[in-house]
Length: 315
Image: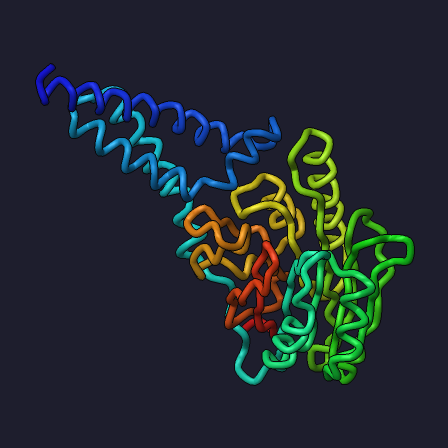
């Protein structure tokens, strides 16, 4: 077999492999119809880049039909990401008071509790939501001498839940919100305003029932935000990327702004997977607020990276 024929056969194989991946990418836009399609949507950036590469290889090897198909779908995937990459949340108004918020799924079995407490102190945070927290985490926090008070604790009878910390000078108060699942809500001062901060952690959508449970909690959170008077911040490990239909439900139905927009991908999970990491930990807010300094922090042994962002009145 000549080199040309080998190259042609290789290009055909690459092209048709690309068509299979391209089919999954197209189906990922229909995530509301089937939970597996929505799982595929989480990896849309990676799949789009791979498809463009595979398409170029196939076209170069004159496997035109699968090559151009693969390349076209890859480019469509990349174009769909443009609004996320180029859009930006409103800035904070000059002179506005601000609060620094962190959302972190620490992992209940993570032993690096002291290191996380030291990081919280170093970052000079105002409001902290710790997901997959435990009584051990809360004991460590109480003994760390942080300038924060525990506003909400893991419910008795549960192995894991949400622990919320806030600066006493913000007059934090726990809000009674019944949405189901792992969640907590508090209210704090932002200058002369009271701002609600809702933290949710739906289950991972790894089966039809779990996907339905995740979607249900996110939809109920969106409805709670939409019907609440005043400004709201929503944080948490949502087990959904910005390309998931569930995330779109939260953002659109709740009238929320994604603080990740215009800040790149900032993937948070799974830690250590390099280019395969995806952003499933989020901070969003209503339109009367603005944000700045949105970034991720070190994982400290968790499978997640924390998300940190400064929130103020929109400029």
